Image 1 (cartoon, protein in one colour):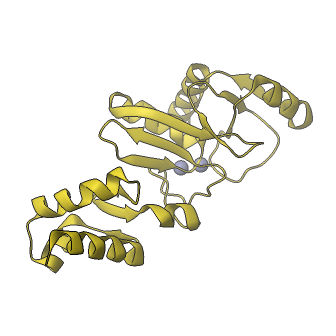
Image 2 (cartoon, helix red, strand yellow):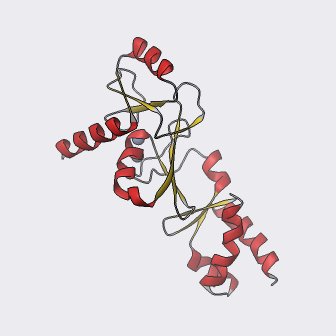
Image 3 (cartoon, protein in one colour):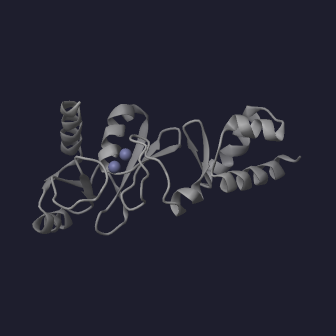
Length: 186
Ligand SMILES: [Zn+2]
Ligand SMILES: [Zn+2]
C-alpha cells in the first residue's frame, strides 16, 4: 500500500473508531510503529487527529461528542466548560473544567505550552493564564468542587458575581486556592 493511501485509511479508521493505539495500527497495516508515527505526524499537524495517552483520537469527535473523559478526574466533560492543555510536543489534553485544568497544570507544568479556557458567558476560547477566575459562586455547574469558572474580562466576572456571588481571582491565585483546598480535603 502506498504511504499516501495508508495515511488516508488511518485517518478514516481513527475517525470511525474514535480512538486507536499506535500498536493496533502497526499490526493492521503490517508496518512498524515508527512508520505509523511518520504517517500520523502530518495528520496531527493538520489538526485532524490528536495524540492522547496511549494512542490517538479523532479531532472531530472531540468537538462533536459529549462523551469524553477529563484528563484529571476522568469525568465526562462538556465542551462549554472544557479546559484545554496544549503541550510542548504539540499534543493536547482536555480537562472537564477549570478546576481540573488547574490541578493538571500543577502536575505537568513544565511540559505545558499553552492553556486555553472557555469564557463562561461568551463561550469563546480564551488564554487561561490571563483569565479571571470566579470561585465560591452559588451557581451550580455540576462539575468539580470547588467550582471554578473562567472569564476573559474582569467586567464580566464582576457582573456575574453580582448575580451569583463569588470571588474573583487571577490564574496564580486560583491555582493556589484549588491546590490547597484539594490537599486539605484528602
Ligand atoms: Zn475533571
Ligand atoms: Zn470538572
